[in-house]
Length: 279
Image 1 (cartoon, rainbow, N blue to C red):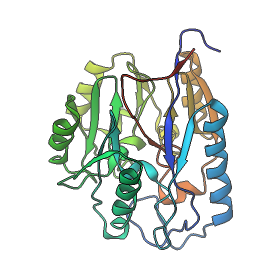
Image 2: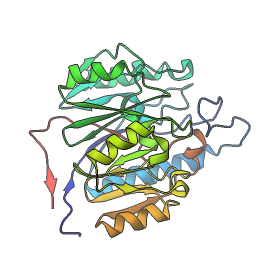
Image 3: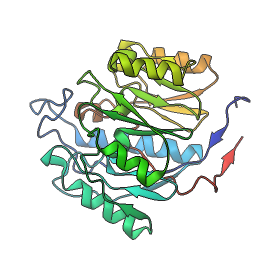
Image 4: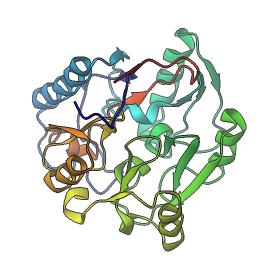
C-alpha cells in the first residue's frame, strides 16, 4: 500500500461485449475488414470486471442489446455526478439506440435523468477532476453540450479542444488520477487547451506518443490504483514513480473498436457527501 495515496471505492456500470463486433468505422481504430475474436473480447472484459471487484469496487451490469456492438463502451452511456444523470445523444447513427438503453437503466435504478439537448457522448468526453468537469470537444461531444453540463451539475466546466482524430474522446487523451492530478498527451489538444491544462495541472504526468498509441491513457484510477492497458509500460513506470499502484490489463481485442479500460467503465457517482474511502 502506498501511504500517500487514498483509494476511493467506486461504483461502476459495465456492459458485457456479448455482441461485440467491428461492423463499421466511426473512428480511426476501426477496420471492418480485420477479424474480431468475440470470445477473446469477452475474456478480456471479464478480466477487467474481476479486477475492479478484487480491488473492492462495485460493478453493476447493463444488459447488452443485440445489434449494438459498441454498447460495451459504457463510459459513453451517460455522465453521472452527485446522483444526477445527463443522458447522451450520439453523433453517429450506428450508436444512437444505445442512448435509450442506458437512459432506461438509470431511470429504473432511481436516478434523476436530464436530456442532453446536444450531441454529448457521456463520460467519454466528460471527466470529473476535483470540483471541475473537464469537457472534450472537437470530434464527438458538441461544444454547446458543455453549457448543459454546467446547468445540471452546477460545477465549473473546462472546455478542452481535441485535435487528433485518433484521440476522438477526451478519455483517450487524458486520465484523471485523483482530485489534483491528471495524465495526458499534450499533442492531442489544441495549443490553447494545452495552456489551460498546464495551468490547472502543473504536476501532470505527460504521456508519450507510444503509450497513447496503445490507448494507455484510457485508464481508470481510484486515487491509488490505476488500471491501464498492459502495453503502456512507459506510463505505468511514470505512475509508479508518483506512488500509484498500476494494474495492467490486456484490452487489445476491444481496442480494435477504439476502446480500452475506461471506455468500458462508467463511473456512477451517487453523491459527494456520502463517499466510502479506504486508506
